[in-house]
Length: 435
Ligand SMILES: C[C@H](O)[C@H](O)[C@@H](O)C(=O)CO
Ligand SMILES: [Mn+2]
Image 1 (cartoon, protein in one colour):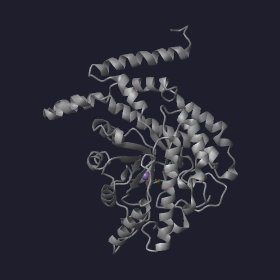
Image 2 (cartoon, protein in one colour):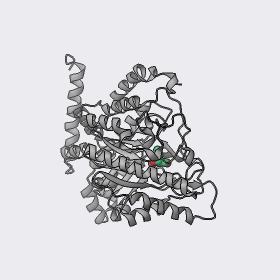
Image 3 (cartoon, protein in one colour):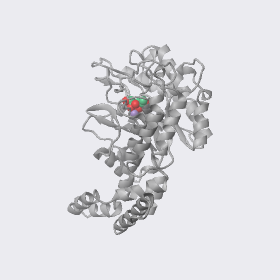
Image 4 (cartoon, helix red, strand yellow):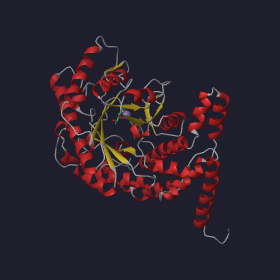
């Protein structure tokens, strides 16, 4: 092959490896073309807040609150809506498929001085215009943190009715923005409510804040909304920094709330006990709930929001979705924020891993494994699952990336480095994006 240009050789190698890998999977009755078709229909919601270390554009310079934390000061984080959009575009160039962007309320793109309770669709018009142009969907979140009215750690369950009302109004406004996104873009927006409310030390009264939260949510959701455009989700948490002993919006609280009010539960993989996994919860929830929202994240010792890697839990989440045929009912979002590495690379790594894990799960002989299990042949079950771990899914992934017009393997890194040199490192220090 010495006279053949390098690009052509690479093409041929990708195609040959794909053909050989396909034969191996087909021996187990796996239809690889169908798998790739299914994968291409999956939308991952890319969380905008990885792009600027959860700073946002409303009330610039305000400290990150809510018991979440970003560490690291990697150069070049976005500090304007235009920069953030450019960086998201760059990430999507390097990720196969058509996806969504997940916005927080503090990312409003407006020159108006507006507080969270007054936000309206008009403050997000530029985001919608861009999403339409690029073919992205949008999801949304009220920002119930990083605000003076959340400085004591309470929002929707606040004992002061006036403060509570402020947050209720903010969440009501957020649903209208979500509905606007859904209507404009022709695909539903998931509007996810997460609040940090909780106590550092053991409270005397665990019930009253939960009653207040339940009533606040009921008031928020009492506004009629078209579910074809906006899907309401609620996200639980076990603990945060400063709410180590008690969190009002616990998992049990939201399970009960969402089931009794037909709402969607968001499972964040960092929001449970360190030995508890969300992969083991999905099938139970979806027996009773209509839909599911995921915040795919990676806790390291605590809810540290590390970039998603191809670890056991990611694979198990993907397997659960595929084996249980839960993908149709699941909205997959990412939730991590690492300020210590290139912000675009973080998105690319986390999203490519999530897609790759789904592909790996789709390339397992699920029906056969289920039969074997029913027959009680646990030896074959273990043997096959383990052997499939070294089946050549990488060759199928490379072919998929190439066909989608996205870089194959680590080729994307060179583009991220070029973008870093030519764009990120030139961002002005004054904007607080280069250290
Ligand atoms: C910024 C997000 O809304 C936030 O990370 C939330 O989803 C969460 O997981 C808090 O721990
Ligand atoms: Mn989350």
